[in-house]
Image (cartoon, rainbow, N blue to C red; front, side, top):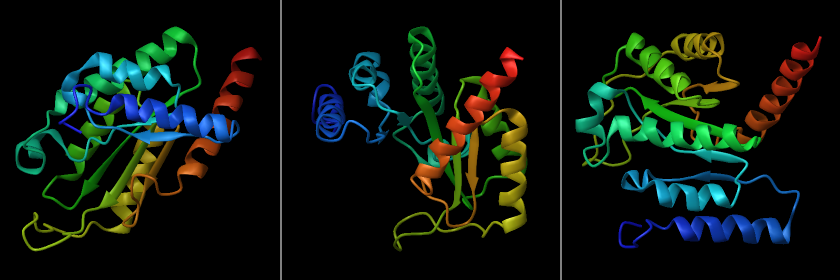
Length: 197
């Protein structure tokens, strides 16, 4: 909502609070824009304490100008870093999440570099799916990525320290979202137990 001064942040926050009021046990994941780098708008959403804060990277740095001409790769990383830093400072259990679509001309290793960039800003969950051209005027599919490549990215992501990586041709941002958070909670519990032994 670029037409609103806060980019719609207050609406996200109000929705989170209303969901919690109606169902306190409901887990809430929000998929937000970059708010044009406005940290105050991000903080408005964080004040409402979502369980998962998702902001999609969408593609590798090299393709940003072509795929996301109105966005900025570093600004995306900065948003995720700010969210994780505040989460850690306040001792919250919130998870940060980001996703990309592949098949737009990226190389395998460029995706790995993006994964490293996300881990460097403490991103917890990553999704990787196949780009499909929605209609003729949109960018064409450069190639269909093999299931083996998706599987390898998942392996690499787990080695890099992601709590969960959802990587397959049909993966979309919210695909298996419940399993992503439940799996992460289980892994976090295991890590906590291991650290006390």
